[in-house]
Image (tube, rainbow, N blue to C red; front, side):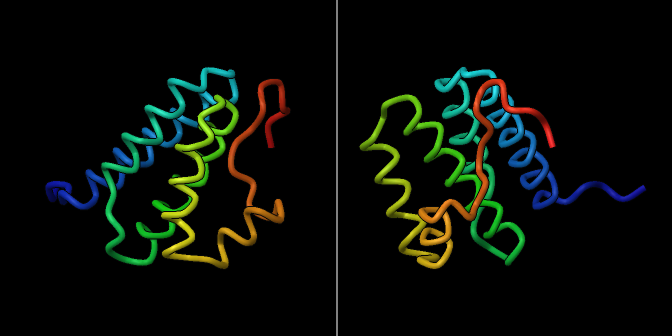
Amino acid sequence: MAAESSEAKEATEGLRRSLEGLRATAHGDLDAAQAAFAAADGAVDYWGLGAGMFKLLNRLMWVEAARRDGETATAERLLGEVEAINPALVAAYREGDVPVAPHPGDPGP
């Protein structure tokens, strides 16, 4: 059995931490959500389309958690960073076309 590549380990860790952030957001634990999204962001770089898009979407989930936690400056800084890379994604987010994080009590999919 082949050893898992370091890229695969980073992607797996990034996804795991992002899912923790979504779970924490859904339960209203916004400090934990932001910490998990930050950890996911640090685990993944923009190399490659899949990882890059994941990183952008993870940052939008972090923006949402920061906003809900009253950390407007953090949210705006992160949103600006995403917009510098993909303005169309941020425009869609602002229009409400990018579902990023559940509110506490929202039903599952």
